[in-house]
Image (cartoon, rainbow, N blue to C red; front, side, top):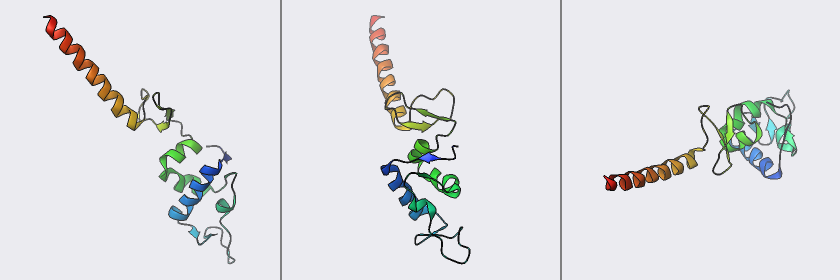
Length: 123
């Protein structure tokens, strides 16, 4: 992963919401990990441009799959052929996200049934 991940304002709001909801080191605006006797402000909450906190990147960010794919871009991530949304593939032949995969499979099944019925009538 990159050392510096730049954020858009929308992503920054999502990151701050994730920190407040899921980070085990967040305590009313302070970071427990950085606390050395004096309260220390959570550095990730006060930055709006990029991700600084390694703990957030490793432990908290994967909880939001869409944001994780946008920011961290894992090696096995791809873009869906139908909608263009990023997704983490489970195999090397994956082309569709989980939502589009169902749609494409149903559409292909309908086409197969139509061809089958047409060819059956010719016999």
